[in-house]
Image 1: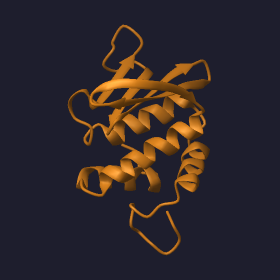
Image 2: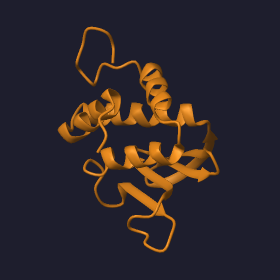
Image 3: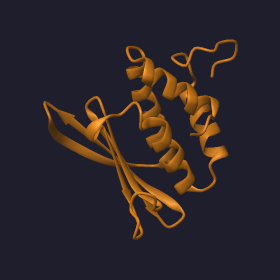
Image 4: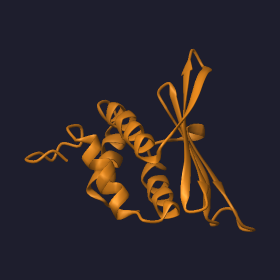
Length: 136
């Protein structure tokens, strides 16, 4: 958060990403926290979680796909790291997809959530929880 304000719409995205990354040394934990905090905001097919194991409902998260605006954010667990991509659409048709680093992926995801928070109380609360560090 920017010093002197509690408004989640007024955050330094670089600082928020650095803090989020420093608190989450395991990428699986990072995805679990993100999924937990975005599940109430992103209804329907806006949040797709792929799990491993026999009991898929509670198995470890292997990939997550988040649709926000015209972008689709996908992160897949690859050993101790994440393979992150951002797909860009126009008129419902994907026009390009790019692989980015985890830091850039998180920054753009938080930026999209920040834009949605301007008109959605649940998105505003999720952004605040992510930035402050509340876990579900």
